Image (cartoon, rainbow, N blue to C red; front, side):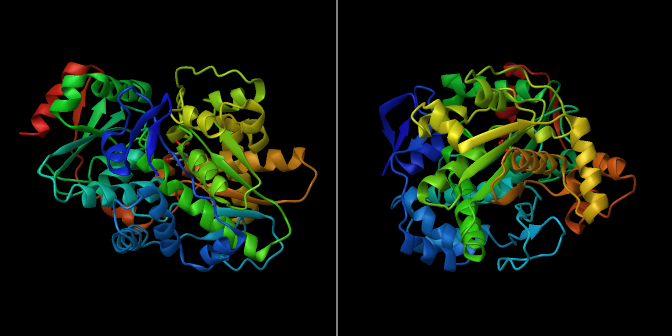
Length: 451
Ligand SMILES: *Cc1c(COP(=O)(O)O)cnc(C)c1O
C-alpha cells in the first residue's frame, strides 16, 4: 500500500511523506493505491467496536506499518475523546440503538473541542504528524487557509506540538465572530500558533498558500506542510465516521437503503464518505448540499465543471469556488461521469432558503441547525421529495449552531445560550497580524515565525 499522485500514477510515496509533503512534486494530490474492502463478517466486527477502536483498525490500512497498532490505538483514543451522536431532528438522543420509526437522522460531528467536524481530521492528523516527526529535529511550518472552521481545528490540534509552527490565514470579514475569536485566541504571543488576517477573500488566502507552496525556495526554507484538505491526511480520517455510523444505522434498520447528505465546500468530507463506501460502508448514495457556490452541484447536473470565484454566504465554511478535492473524486471513479452521478446527487440553496429552514425546523422541533447543516438537511428533503422509494436519510451536521450565533440568533429571533467552551474564549484577548494578499508580506510573517 502506497500513495500515488493523481496526475502521475508512477509518482509514489509513503503515508509519512504524503502527509508531510502534502502535494506530489508534480502538484498532484496523493491518493491511496489500495482502498481496503471489508467482507460482511469483517463489517460485523467493525460495527461492534466503539468508534475509537474502529478508527484505529481502519487507520492501520492507510498508515501501512509506519505507525504500529499500539500507537494508532493511542492516537485514536486520544483524538476521539468526545461523543458522536446519531440523533433524530426531534432532538432525542438515540445513540446508537435507534428505536423510533424516524427515517431522518442527524449525525452530529461537532462535539470536538472546536465544535466543527474538522476536529475529526485535525486531531488524527496532528497526532500522526507528531509521532512521525518525533525523531526528527527538522521544524515544519503548517500554512493553512481557513474559511472559518479549519483554522480553529488545526490550531487547537497542533497547539504546543514540538517542531511545528502553524500559520493560519483567514479572510477579513469572511469568518463568523465566534470563529475569529477562536482563531485568534488559540495560542499566546509565545506559542506555535499564529493567526493572520488577510485583507481579502478566502480565495485570496487559498491562493497565498498555493503560491507559497509552489515557490520552491520558500517551501523548502520553511519546510511547509499543508493542513487543508489537499492533504490526504485530512481526508482519510473523514472516512472513519461514515463507515462506523452507517454500520450503527444499518444494525437497527437492516432493510432500508441508507443515504447520507453532506453540506459541502472543498468536498473533503464527501471524499471521506466515498472512501468509506468503497471500503464497504452500507451507504447507497450521497447527497451534496451547496450554497450559492455550487460548482459540484452544477457539474452533477451538466457534466461540465466550471469553477468560479467564491461569493460570501451565510454558510461561510462552504464559500468555495474551486473545490480542491474535485480531482480526487474523479480519480476514485476513473473519470466516469455516469458512475459519479449514480452515487452523488446534488442540490444548492440560497441564504434565504437556509434561513427559512433553520427557523422552520427550530419552531417545529426545537432542533437548532447551523447554516451549513441546514443546507445538508434541505438537500436531503429535496432528494426525498424527488425520490419515491423509502430510505434512511442521515444528514451530516458539520458545526455547532453557536459558532454562527450572530446569524442564528437573528434568524430564530432570540438569544441562544453558548456552550461553556465558547464562552471561555470570549474572555481572552485576540492576537493576530494583518497582511494584504501578497506573498512578500506572507514571507515576512513566516520569517518572523522561525526566529
Ligand atoms: C469545512 C466545512 C464544510 C465543508 O466541508 P468540505 O470538506 O470542505 O466540503 C461544511 N460545513 C462546515 C461547518 C465546515 O466547517
